[in-house]
Length: 213
Image (cartoon, rainbow, N blue to C red; front, side, top):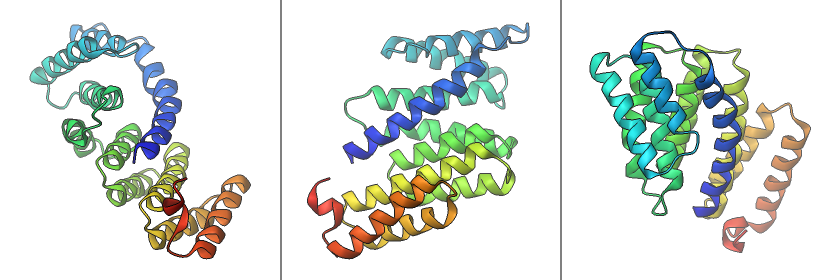
């Protein structure tokens, strides 16, 4: 599981810091609550335990004024993900609060692309990969032209397959690789999926998980 988390952290770094924090740097409106939220986002650019706690306090204060404030809710989602990644314990219970706030955003805005993306990451880390995949499918039903969610689903399938290999569940691993191969248009992803499917067929119940890859 530690290896899967490491793989997913790389994906988080690629996406979160290129989108979420870029958006956070965009000029905000002049209202104090928006400025506070921007300050909270700034704290998370180089987070430590104290900065995460301070940012969470800012977001929670904003939500006490307006529980439906999207940026504040997403700020908590992002902070909880960062907190989980930074923690040595990797306790999935830390993510429960983030999941609650991602769901709050989607309840009021079912077309919030980033909320679907972050919710799927949280569910994966919580050991609920099937729910995370369903969440991405729900997002694509709402946003069928979303390139971000489509790519996220393909990456998610690959990570699911590797996780199942690690745990020795070769049936689910093979199904995930087959789904990826049928969905992707990327020749490299197709090649990777095919190689894993063939390897799983050759190694039987042992698979990659049993070989410790």
